[in-house]
Length: 309
Ligand code: NCD
Image (cartoon, rainbow, N blue to C red; front, side, top):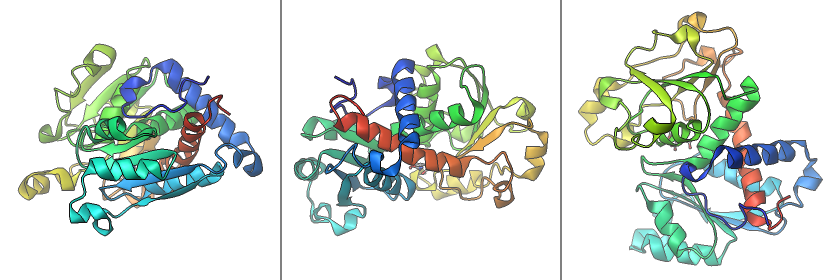
């Protein structure tokens, strides 16, 4: 039996290097198959999505991923149009949606929401973002992108810049990178440094340094992972205004970077990467979004097929 069959994806912490590499191999396979072969993988299966927060890429990439492997999707992308608005609990909504589907994809404002949902759901739950805590499928997509674009993960120097306090993709990525031999530099305004309680475990697995200065060591990075300032998670707008626009990756910064370095971003981008970077060979964030669809198709194929595909 394949080890992912009927399993939840709640935290990247549940994935060691061996599991990650298996997902990468399956993703390569998805990419290589022709569309008709791919559509056999999850033929007739239904994915339900339940999004309590806005999303473009994550929801649509799950939608298009399940379609690419022959399944279909239904769900709630705007919670104001659902019975949650009438006061229905997350527990009841999850219970109902899991009856109508084979796998449930949840995005919620609260940390712990996916773990809670997984206890209630009869079907596997995939965490598509839980508060400021985790976004595991984004991290798998990020690692896959690094591997495809740099041909390896071990040995790389990686800069991660932006809102490291509230950005959940950062925590999942750091835990994922903890499985590899990488050198990480965390760059953020002082007030947006990584939350020390959340990186307590990462410290044991990962070598990293912290800085507020993006220029220092910029010429050493193989990968620069840029994140947006998470405006909606600031308790106080004043605090947001103080850090807004702290870092902008533009052509001047690129000139200082290695010729073969790559720029990643989970997207959405606000103003932290100027659009003139998009047409340079360094920009890989749109490829990253495309890989996301294939990674999710592979995960669905593994979760929904007892013997894999
Ligand atoms: C991220 C998220 O929702 O955490 N978006 C995404 O899924 N690609 C990043 C963000 O919102 O900044």
